[in-house]
Image 1 (cartoon, one colour):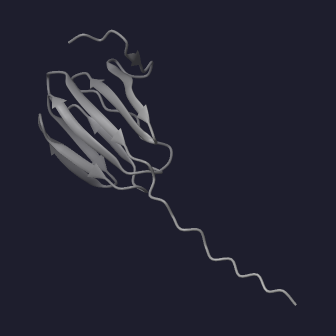
Image 2: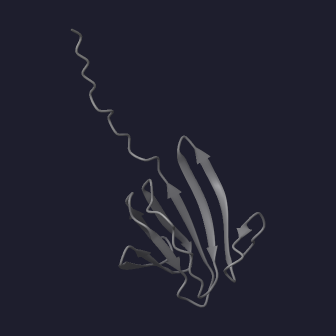
Length: 116
């Protein structure tokens, strides 16, 4: 697997990522996860929804207290406000595309101004 252009995590033996898309609030990152490696947990819940797509290998995605086993060509939607980690539970490398969508727009509260 070619790892040119990826940045690595110093705390893991084989966890590499590369941003592949950033436009109009949509961010895409490819993550290469070595055998037996788990991504570090996020400090905060997600501010926006995420879709994980496994393009190579198999992974376990932990969302909150639930585990989801994803194989090649499978995807998982993670709603905003959740946190997640990814673990490669196999002996082969895994490649995951993460797509972070813009946070849903919230309507501004009505402002009522009364004049005397």
